[in-house]
Length: 94
Image 1 (cartoon, rainbow, N blue to C red):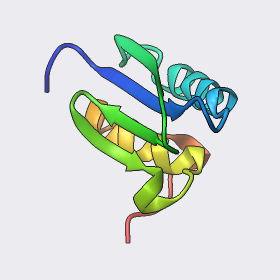
Image 2: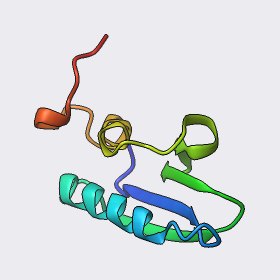
Image 3: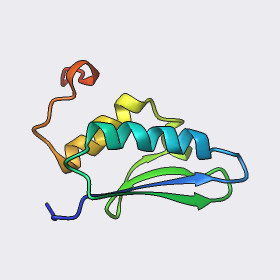
């Protein structure tokens, strides 16, 4: 695991998804305030809504639909802080 824990949310400006991206960014920054070193909002086009941790795509709207915050938090946690409890947002492993 690298010292730099960067999350990027790429969102479609044509679809006006900035508020959704900004809200998700706030949720992630609040949850991982000591684990993340950077969170970037990246304007895109063509219906894009992708969440990346480093260079790894952890959520892509085209494949998975719009994410529930809990699902994104779990995907980010698994990469930046695997031992961290998400409290009530955690669902038992299947």
